[in-house]
Image (cartoon, rainbow, N blue to C red; front, side, top):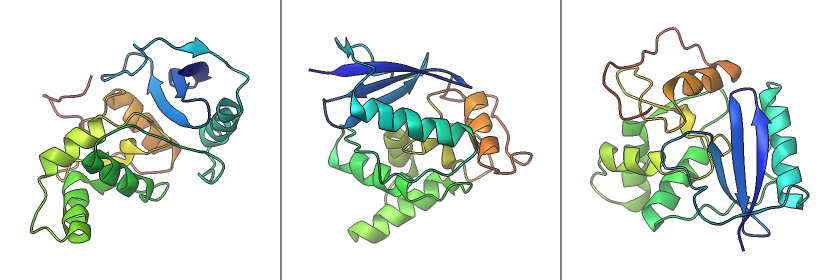
Length: 177
């Protein structure tokens, strides 16, 4: 059974999903690749949702809450999981480029190279937005590109974390809404 809970955040409604023990999804209303299409049972009183709500409350107050209290279980391929683990290592208030992640994946796997486009696809399929901080990934040219929750929300999250965003720009053509 898949459980769900709505959380109202400063940037809009968030849908949280759980497998009964661990958080499996967190989607911003209207985002691309929204995972809330499966049959879900509303269960706002579940412990995993209380922990996630507490984490989100702290985060939206401008704190850097630890991930230790959250049990996460994002479903994805081995490659996606590897990318998402790297995302979890991007410090609060910092950014990393798709190319940086590709180079780190190549280094960790012993491959000569990993395509930044493949990294972008995996980042875009992150099922636990905000907590797995895909909003901290930017284009190498300073573009705020590729955020399934919307580029204005990406800027809002980076600003909340104290990232100077004046030098970032939203490209004229983007894959994000």
